[in-house]
Image (cartoon, rainbow, N blue to C red; front, top):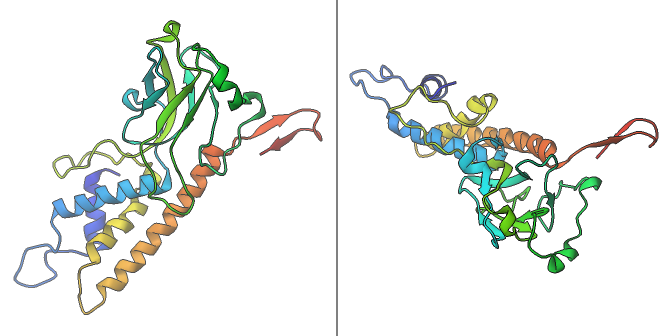
Length: 255
């Protein structure tokens, strides 16, 4: 759904904000600018807590140019977490080393990397990476911009080459009332779900016979449920790789 459709849905079908509700006044309770601001906040909150925007193509977000002798790279401010990293031209991802604070992530056996080897590695081709992102199952908001660390430090031979990332990120573009044909960046299946938070923001300070705060709470609870389901699905897809093989109790899948 585009922004204009979401705005109409929020105003007419969720908030029931119609100009003919009160005789003698053509005004709405909420302006378009206010509701678009709430939709923006809802999209950001859903993306941050639900981990629903995965990106492997946007150059500014997913490409890191190597610098000789530089091992740490601050990523785009929209990045919440790095799912994988690959040196351009390689067929296999770099191994993840160190602590990533993702309880459900287990490195597949073929990508085993011993961090104890790092201190003795001279500069050369990057073989592994780590990040300092923090994603907690309970504390959704304790997230800072990740820094990508490469091991070993790139040598002169790899300066200018590109590390390509698959990331989880926040929305990059703000939704505005002047571009109602634009589409939110979170997946379309969550567009209506995120409107629950916009409705909560709109209703939390409105007191119509003391009924609005209760409605606001109901929308907040519904939003939190949607986010929890989306996050659980995202964590299963991104951070619990599956392996298969022959000769191990027949043909089987393993976590």
